[in-house]
Length: 399
Image (cartoon, rainbow, N blue to C red; front, side, top):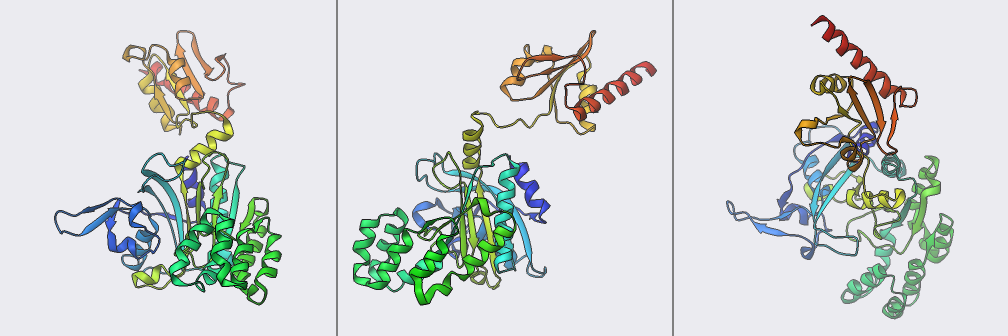
């Protein structure tokens, strides 16, 4: 799954970078979206600095661009994979260690850059086999502008009510705000297709121009064929102190929480001394695997093995098959694997190749069908195996 995700990143010109699993606390605090209660901290015994296991990789990418890559020309198209550590929250979060894969597009701004990020997210999901999902668009700055007009002591409570979609509490908290409070309550209830953007314009009235970045992104995303996947939630506050423009969450059946998300964060690089615009997203690979299991109804992911072989001269044959580009596992009977078909079935290996005095035959593991010819075996697989067998036979004859 991870390889398929990264193949999608690479096809769009993104380069893989690696960052350390822990970071100085001041680096991560600059991002503005790290809460102390969500992270695991420790004191560096050598220098006495307070550090934390990273809860987010994007600030590390920002630091990298502002320091080591400062002399490289923008735009930066960077991809990453790694684990972040967060305290468990919600029914989908069963562990603290979360595997992530994502991209950052730094140095470009505008709807086409935002649409590129969303298109890559959709492409990666489809490449791993997830065909039913939602790209939920939001525009946090519109809500933030309204909330900032409330008394400072009540803003946190107001934001939490929005996050919970608690309309009774929201109506009560916004009552002192008059017309501004009514706008906030109406926006919190605007969810649906792109058509709700016209309703949002009515709600905002003279301030409807604030919706322009989201409208432009929706248009650019539709032009890239993403229209059927798009929804809008104008009451979403995820990334409240972080996103400066349109943001999005990826939703699918299964986890009950987003399987990924991202957006525009034009202020982050400036906190590291280099004021460049940026946008990106990350996928939670655990949640993505959950969504895939929900779709296909199995607890196993596809195997990383193309073929298992049970052969008299398995070592040499396996080497030839690997040289031909196949991912091969050897199953020698005298080394503990007495039932190769059961092993291949348990590990979701699609094909087993058995060779011996009878010649060679393919076993389709899922159905237990024994195929003596290559006509019903995938043509490329059968052809490569046949070439390797013939080459091995020729070597044996000369020897």
